[in-house]
Amino acid sequence: MIQTEGLTKRYPRVTALNGLSMDIGPGVTGLVGANGAGKSTLIKILLGLSPATEGRASVLGLDVTTEGAAIRALVGYMPEHDCLPPDVSATEFVVHMARMSGLAPTAARERTADTLRHVGLYEERYRPMGGYSTGMKQRVKLAQALVHDPKLVLLDEPTNGLDPKGRDEMLGLVRRIHADFGISVLVTSHLLGELERTSDHIVVIDGGTLLRSSATQDFTQATASLAVEVADSDEHPDGTSALLDALTAAGLTAKADGHLLLVDIAGEDTYDAVRDAVAGLGLGLIRMERRRHRIAEIFAPSARESAPEPTAGAA
Amino acid sequence: MTVPTGEPPAGASLYDIGYRHYDGERLGRSYIRRALFSQSLRGAYGLGRSGKSKVLPMILFAAMCLPALILDAVTVYAHLHKPPVDYTRYAIYLQAVIGLFLAAQAPQAVSRDLRFKTVPLYFSRPLERIDYVAAKFAAMASALFLLTGIPLVVLYAGALLAKLDFWTQTAGFGKGLLSVALLSLLFGGIGLVLAALTPRRGFGVAAVIAVLVISYGAVSTLQGIAYSRGNDTVTGWLGLFSPVTLIDGVQTWWLGASSSFVGGYGPPNAVAGTVYLLVVLGLIAGTFALLMRRYRKVGLG
Image 1 (cartoon, chains in turn brown, purple):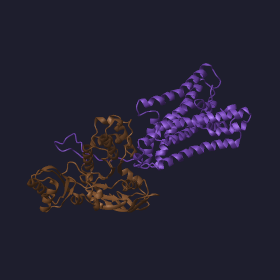
Image 2 (cartoon, rainbow over the protein chains, first blue to last red):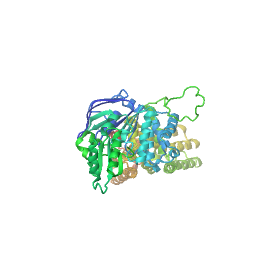
Image 3 (tube, rainbow over the protein chains, first blue to last red):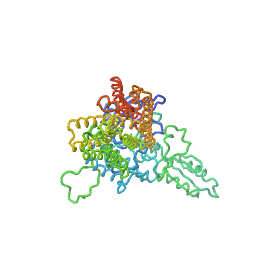
């Protein structure tokens, strides 16, 4: 789907991309990087809107420097920022954007009705977009990226500004784009945990270079840990350290992080071992949840001491 | 995802709401340019937009046409031998209406896309920067041409009804159309450049009005001073410094129109006449180039 080779982009003051080489196949690919890691620059180059300083890139087998327009006809783009005029309805807006992708008026209207339904926008679609919730706006932004039935969509931080429920719905939609619609997805986020649940493949970039590119499973195994919090009891005034000793004795790798214990997940039986240890000590188990690390921790092991990013609903 | 073909199997639901791929035609840049042009042109008159946004352009359009209808009535019933107002003079008389229209609609055409950051959505599609700028430029100029040209058609129709000389009227009408075409391109370009400077609609409106009113006011005042000192050459050259007097100078020298300059002297000589035309054409090309430049940096925001 996307190939880059030694892709470099230098601005007068900063180097946004530095010799980035990667090969992204079909499916859902998560592009992870901190703000300023070069994600947006990469998207601009892939859409043929900004020439690379060095190196080459191709999208769907088309060269970005010479076949930009052909790429943009077959690719959808959902920007990170707001991009919706408040005084027009979702239907009018998406119809217009479909025509801007080269669809004839009738086809544009049909595709708009279909696409808005697929992203979950019904009666609201005839109302001006100014009154929409953030979740509805994100759906319209997604719809305008899908309306011309692209082969690939580039989604820039689609979950930004959404509450946990909205996030889950959006990630479910992203998953469906590939699973049900058969459209490949490149989705960016600064949160690895989020993409773990959605992507088949994850690419991590930092400072404009490729840090890691592998199947999502590899990441999950490498990064999963269990956060355990227990209540102190009369018998064990410091329940956390008592549990730490018990777990270490049971052969698990764990370390204390304030009131929390972070236990590396060795396998399914880790959960049982923690449960048994807590019960054995007679402590109250306040919570036990699977944690995912911030991306920073993947490429900076020293940063592991800092608090990991909690992911709701895991474990 | 799969497209059903042929007869649906027995018991298949009529309400298949699965995803359907689009296998139809994908039209190229020229179609997209035309679609953007017509959407912007309609938008300039509030068509395809809320009822509220139709009010002002429609009132201004009526204000442009109404005097022409009255003049028609006068021509027909008073049995005049020539129309009371020259075709080339009509737009100059009603320049305030044209200015208001431009001030209201140029920001509508470009500031909205900037303010709501819709521009990146255009540039992530097959159209190129020049397609966007050309469509917006052409739409604004066409909106102005309709605003200034249709009253001339009304005047012309009135003149023919009054059975005035056909050839004289047709020649005058043609010159009038040529003059308002130039005016539409010049005003459209200036209005769009000023409006595209800022994503704020209000600033755009104020900037367009300020540039038109201040430049015209200053030029007229200075022309008045020069005229009172008997310096007709200076009066003729001063017209270069405001959009309305530029058009006036061009049509006076090249189309034989009567000048609206203070004292009624147009460009003083052939050199001045040529300079007027070159400045008008240069401004039209220059505003287009400035717009291209303006959108170079917009990219994906």
